[in-house]
Image (cartoon, rainbow, N blue to C red; front, side, top):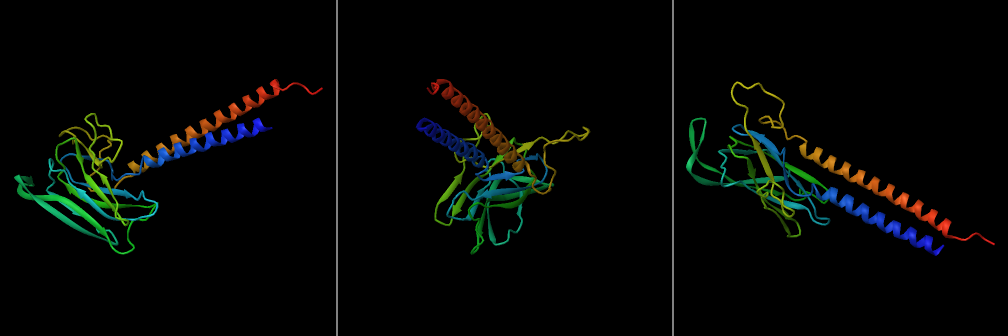
Length: 247
C-alpha cells in the first residue's frame, strides 16, 4: 500500500510539473510587446498596432514608449486615439531629407509615448493595442522598434533586443519587428500573399500563432498524460506479478 501511495504521489508531481512547463511555455510565447500584423509591403503605407500585454500579477501598464528605427526613417506617422491614453510625438531632423510624393521631408518621427490617465492602465491579465499608420515603408527587410513598458509599481520592461543575424528572435527582451516584403513588380499578376494590404485593420496573425502554440502545448500535455497512464498500468501489472499468492 505504501509503495502504491508513493507511486501515485510521484505521478502527481510529474503531471504537475508537466502542466506548469507546458502552459508556462505557451503563455510566455506571447507575453512580450509585438507589432500586429507582423508583415507589410515596401513602398506603401501600412496600419499596424503595437500589442501590449501586462505580464505583472500586481501592477498595471501605465506608459509605453516606442522608438522608431533611425536607419529607416518614416516620413509620415500618425496615431489613432486610444481611450484613456494621451499621446506625445517626438521628431528628429534627417539629412538627406526623405522624399514623399515629390516633396522633401526633413523631419521624421523618432518616438511615440502613450501615457494612461487614472484607472486606464492595462491591468494584469489584459492587453491593449495602440494603432499607428506609417509610410511610405522603406525598401528594407525589416523595421525594429525598441519599446519601454512602464508599470504602476515603477518597474520597466525593456523590449529592445533586435533579432539575430539569422533572423531568430532573442531569448530575452525581444524588440517588436515588422517584416517588409517587396512589392509585386509592375505587370505581375497579383497573387495571395502574406503581405498586409495598405491601411487595413491589424490582422490576427499573432492570435493564430498563439493558438497554434497553445494547441501544440495541449497536444504535448495529452501525450504526457497518456504516457503516465501507460506507465501506471505497467507498474501495477509488475506489482501484481511480483506479489506472491496468498497461502
